[in-house]
Image 1: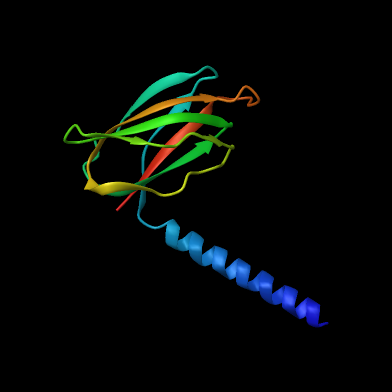
Image 2: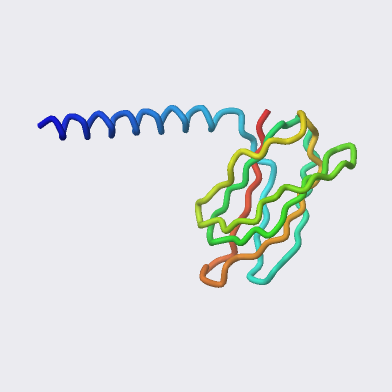
Length: 131
């Protein structure tokens, strides 16, 4: 009986913690754009030309597994930063919140990526920004 109560308490705490974290992280995010990744290694440019400014971005992936090899962000003043993001995103996966140096206008995002051959459709890569 004691074990069951303890297990229920842990499950309840985990559930409420996940719900509160989800609601906090989903506020103030705006879709900046999306691109389809080919099945061969590809380089793409996403034109953002954001009027609002952002201090962090996040990547979401849909339709297939995407192998991200590199990503760069160009700001409105022409400055470019390299975002170390060598990672395999599963379908439905997302990146950590990527902090930008200050609150900035984003002009373009450069990708070097490909959709995994194990996927049936080209992966869709979305970029979200937050203040």
